[in-house]
Length: 299
Picture (tube, one colour):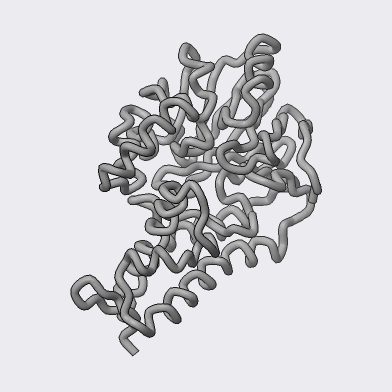
């Protein structure tokens, strides 16, 4: 496992580290040499400008629709874009984008609109083609298998390069923060299933979108530690709900982020989205009930 990610070749697959170790609002990018394909253009703006000039970029692929994966997509307005069909709608319109995050509050939308347009260079885009689960894409440099990994987003995809045995995990990034499933259409169950699917792929190199980025040894227990965060969050929520709480009181407990952080609007969005997913799950399982505006454990 590489301590500090740096620009690294794995056959035709070039790993391009994102600024600040690929932490949000950046991610690591992948460039397929020979085929001039760029995956997730949100690493380093100056490096991507240079890459476009030489050796060039002929297609951009996205693992999913989140802003920290398309931040510099505006550099490639004239270049074909590929994304899964399920994840294409948020890119087509800023209002649809905010809907997909579950932003029903006008105050939240007023905060996010300029952030997305200015910091993330959001412009409406429609893909030239769709990335379809199960497809084997034949490139000059070799083949790429498109693996469906929903949960983080409905249409999140990962990529396996059989030649160099490289697996691009995307946002199943194996960080200590754990999985993100806080969007309107995210799924805890599908997130778990996708991680289990990825760990079965016969790879030799694992590339993730954030932080460590490069795993040159089988992640082993890191897979389990990553998934265990889901149960940890749920356990803390169950403990909290031994006393009746409203959704806003649950959000204020900072189960996901540990403490109040700034900008408040950003972190509360993530906190609320994740807690709503856990509440839905626990209510379906009969472990939590809702009485008016209050949630409480049923036991």
